[in-house]
Length: 148
Image (cartoon, rainbow, N blue to C red; front, side, top):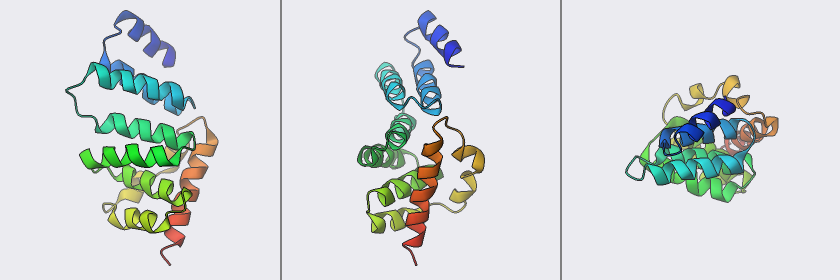
């Protein structure tokens, strides 16, 4: 899929959506830094578009790379635009990894009803970086256990 995205972008390097999708593919392939570059290119090319999805992908890239402070800032920007349930989970896990358990608890408490239903084994396994899903789950466990 990445080869097809690269070919499409070679044919039309101004296709913002193509850069965004390429960034998402790079994240799932375990290339978070390349993914960030591609999503930032997308956001530059579509400067009038909504930015929540772009911030979300960048936030997940930082999470995948273990940069939890940056993940928090980007996922919070995404959440400010779109209250998508999985953003709450990413923030809760990031806060927990930073030792900010009160904020992690608050994110879990604020999540929309059914947010955990979006969190499936397929979602956890969606990255070639197997550590990514394990760290996500561990952060959520820390956040949830701090509620008791």
